[in-house]
Image 1 (cartoon, one colour):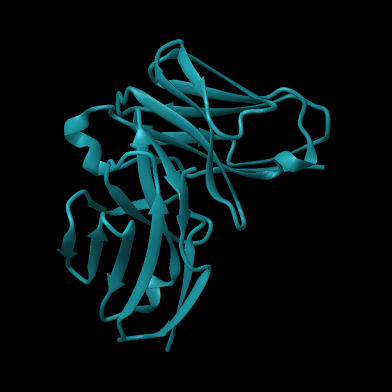
Image 2 (tube, helix red, strand yellow; image 1 turned 30 degrees about the vertical axis):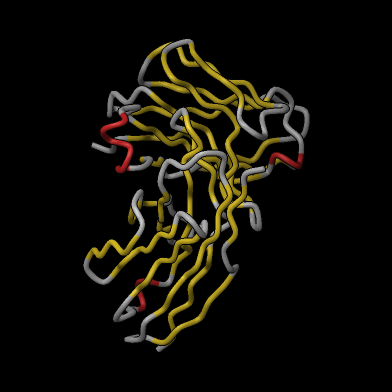
Length: 116
Length: 109
């Protein structure tokens, strides 16, 4: 059973529509992250969560919101999609233990979003 | 500011050795990671260095110099399946991490 599942895997949407991406984990990890990956920029942090209902902004948070009502689920919402939000979105998790810092992140398979 | 630099692309021959460099600037130091990412897939953890020196793990080794803000990933006995992007990443505190743009490695026969 996969530790992190992202849905949908692919989505095409129209400019101005709201879009929600879902990340579901079975690792019981405390920390969850949403990154976007674009050519030439690498992975950039959008938002992250350090517990249920505890979230904070990353470096590219404008136009995005998140929610975490359960440990397992972290939702990313594009409130009104724009073409600049066409990207590959990755969810990642970390246990949040200093003793396990050296294990790094576990990533989901990604969601390829196209805004037309 | 915080920044990670690594070459955009490299090409090497099957069976050879290749070194991928990374320089970083972070406020504070919490270690350095290398991830591998095949095209269309998620990044996967390769190595973590927190002390200066070389960490060897099979065909892959990673080196760190904290005083120079420098790391490299060394891949030996290259195989075609090693064609991928290699991401250098640095934790910035609070379990957040910044990533370099990645080095795309092409292994040719």
